[in-house]
Image (cartoon, rainbow, N blue to C red; front, side, top):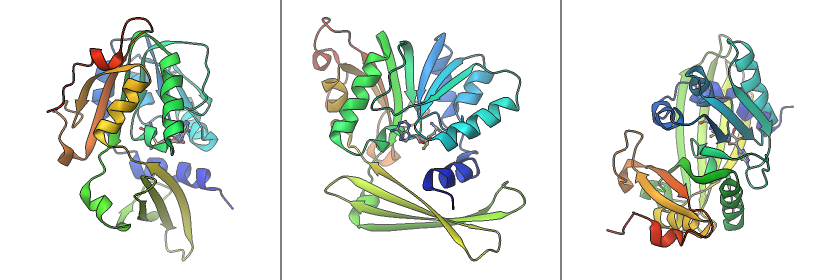
Length: 263
Ligand SMILES: C[S@@+](CC[C@H](N)C(=O)[O-])C[C@H]1O[C@@H](n2cnc3c(N)ncnc32)[C@H](O)[C@@H]1O
């Protein structure tokens, strides 16, 4: 019997391997630095294309099955400068600093309480060089997701996992008090009647909540984009991409230095 982490890792590339709308955005920032840290590196969906362009990527992830897949994929290619280890973003301690830290694809939402969110941002602050950049994207909690306590999505695709067709049904339960989405993926492989289930949770964040968290933890919010084409933030885009800069201690108040003004 596989545990949830094994199940999510087994199907991750089938489910998201073709997602590529964010790669160029992260690459544009990565080519300006000699190395970067990716939090929640997963199976390398972003890290591998970056490393193929000559970027040195350090990555952490709390899931050993995801890291195992990343290493398998790297071993099938020409040597890539990808260095990874198993660590939790709330407690990570690498004894290194970076000019750029990225958390692509909702990784920050895995912090399920405010204390986890703050702990993570403080850890990332410690791992950034002075004036270093933190870049990440999260979903906007859109009205349709929030209006009901149960939300259901269903889709079916033919995947590259062997020759089998994998059907994934996603159910999302919503707890408005905790600001949690509970996501349940039910995977049906081929014609088997058996369903394999993988669960995970997100704590969603609102725009001004995220800004306040960043400022509280010593970051100056430089940009909030509404898409990977760097369009301005717009609630209806469903996406918030934050670019924040580390304000070094002693150089002033992050709130005062933020170029973002409320409309
Ligand atoms: C949606 S996947 C994103 C993977 C990759 N960044 C991408 O864009 O494809 C989220 C990743 O965050 C990892 N993760 C979840 N909680 C974490 C934590 N507390 N510390 C480090 N990684 C975590 C998961 O194991 C998973 O690999």
